[in-house]
Length: 498
Image 1: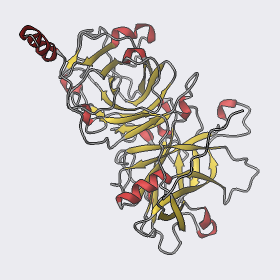
Image 2: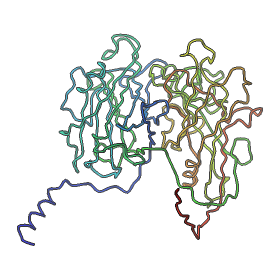
Image 3: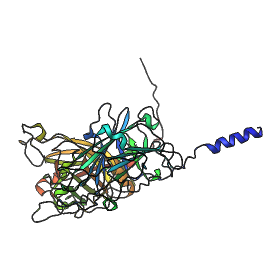
Image 4: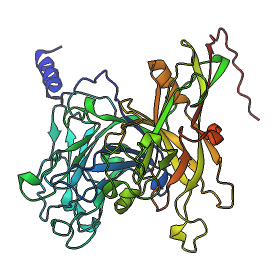
């Protein structure tokens, strides 16, 4: 090779953008986003939660931290992330700085981080993006001024990148003047929907089944000056804005697993009251009476309105509810359950696992002449969660975060003419969640929650505290297990056509 040609090749190599090395670690938190061929039904989208809400009995400190429900879904044209944020003091920028950093903000807003290849590098690569949506009260038509974005260049963020995307803002407050004034008392919160076209991310369409990276920042101002800034909340809690290897995981499609070939040897039924079974459960938030959130105390483990007071874990029911309207945050509820798996012999293969929860009632009036007062069917989703919670100490604010979502089951409203007890059992496929917990040698820690959007989505279930007269309606886990079988030979059949 001629010397001048060798020098040219070396210069070309040296001038290429440096791509950071992928990390070996895997995310602790995952979200599996469903696909919608047409319009997204947010009530059946994936959902997870993070943050905390600093409020008790209609009193919120300044500054106070915020809580967010995050729904995720995708279509043939774009990825959508819908954040609904509980924020009791709304503050937005009247004249947004269009040259500000996309990774920090001093008013209400959120930043979405995406790692398109899911390679979890140690610095932003060219497949990494950040989108900052500054919440504004003026509506979508003005939202472009409230956007910032950047793309990685191998070592840092390139803020000159100007890919096309949009966001839809929204908010609810109790009385005027509303935003940028605390004179009226508590506000309710705001929402932002990120809409990121696949073409903006360098893709021709949705990469079904792909594992990507995702992270979120939640920014908050509650009053003027530096004293009005609340701490930034992040998902996951490990998020570093310049380290994709600290972000969470996003999978375009449902959670799946390859069940090893195994010979069934036994089935173990785990339910409180059965010999050897250890089960605990508790709900946080409301108990069907919209007495959570600012109507209660998100830091209290005491069931609202109980007399004499009892802890959440002593309640005979589990409650699950959510909405897209942040005004109704006091109605939100989530259930946590833990099943000890010690009864299953070690060294086995989990073949299947079924979670049975019995529905006994719901909010709303099924016979109401007003359609808005009738309870709709609710998709109740199953999640694995962190293990650091107790039955008598869990609250809305300290309740564990989701590690993975596993799909859900639609619970339909009960007819009031039916016998109230024992109720109607519903079954969730918990095979993957149980297999993961069993492999780790830990109990199964799970949650039930919903992405439902309308009013009266609350569903009431029996807990492990249910009386002996409905003991079979207590939460039950049925696990079939066996011994792995080695496939020593395979038979290949010809593909026939006619």
